[in-house]
Length: 71
Image 1 (cartoon, rainbow, N blue to C red):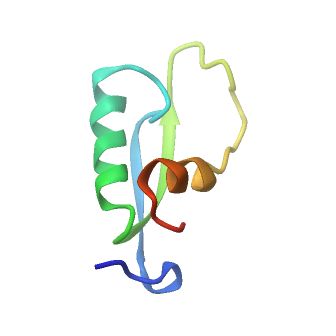
Image 2 (image 1 turned 180 degrees about the horizontal axis):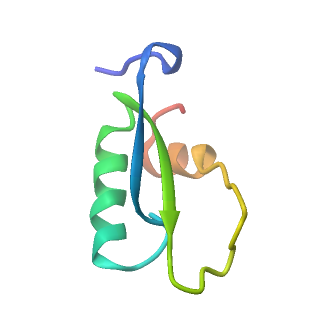
Image 3 (image 1 turned 90 degrees about the horizontal axis):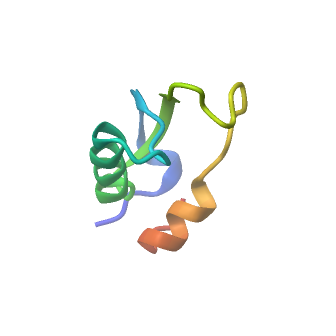
């Protein structure tokens, strides 16, 4: 069952950037991808010496491609 984007609850996830390859980031990514049809996710992610420090990136399109869920 997919909930319309405007009706979903928004969840703030504080963890490693889900695009990184740490164990925490991998688990967070699995949680996000597994529940993207139920929640709108905001990932306030970090990494030591992050290559994109200070940038805000919208991953909606890439998550939709991977999961098949319209974000």
